[in-house]
Amino acid sequence: MSETPIRVTVWNEFLHERSEPRVAHTYPEGIHAAIAEGLQQSLGAAVVVRTATLEQPEHGLSDDVLAATDVIVWWGHMAHDRVSDATVDKVQQRVLAGMGLLVLHSGHLSKIFRRLMGTSCQLLWREAGERERLWIVNPSHPIVEGLSGEYFELPQTEMYGEYFDIAPPDELILISWFEGGEIFRSGCTFRRGKGKIFYFRPGHETYPIYQDANVRRVLANAVRWAAPGGSRYFGEGRQIVEPLSPISGRPA
Ligand code: ZN
Image (cartoon, rainbow, N blue to C red; front, side, top):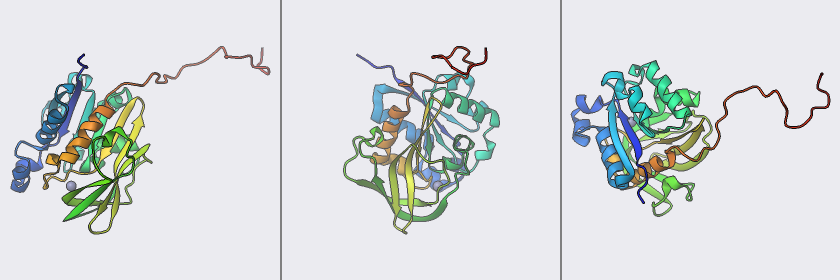
């Protein structure tokens, strides 16, 4: 029996790759293409993956595209403010209605993530090409299924450090330690309305992080986890005139 494929849209601002030779060398087709390739390889017929970028009409996120997206993956860095508020409104409404959202790396300052958190989402950072060790602190969670050992490592990364000003995560899946000594909540889940959100830290544009097998495993697992489903009830506000049981002091 074949399952209905999860419809994924990988969104990338796609600016660094076209302006910086070092980034173009690491991601010749763009960060979105590398992420899409990893999802396709990991999930095969279980997904249909499309990509969208900032400079396309409506940032590649028309009503039709959003309506046909089960999970959206978001990578942005230098042009968060160029994403229109109208698009942010629409993505937020889709998340509340059940669309999954994966926010990657510098997407922590995207309009959509800050909107959904309600906080500044600021953090500490350092670009020194240091080693990162990502500790799995929720080993039974589906997002880390198939990873072996207590942690995995990335040989060269940009450091992100606490304090990370987010809403308290519903679940903490990964905590990073960096060679320079800092730590960071690198894998966090949130629920907003019917939608599931996963923030995943790895992914600086000058390192081949979206080619890493463990990173690809986490992203593929996260797409499956964030896909809509399993929510039986979502409250719509309404007036209840008749109580379930008698109210003794009720005025006649
Ligand atoms: Zn970065």
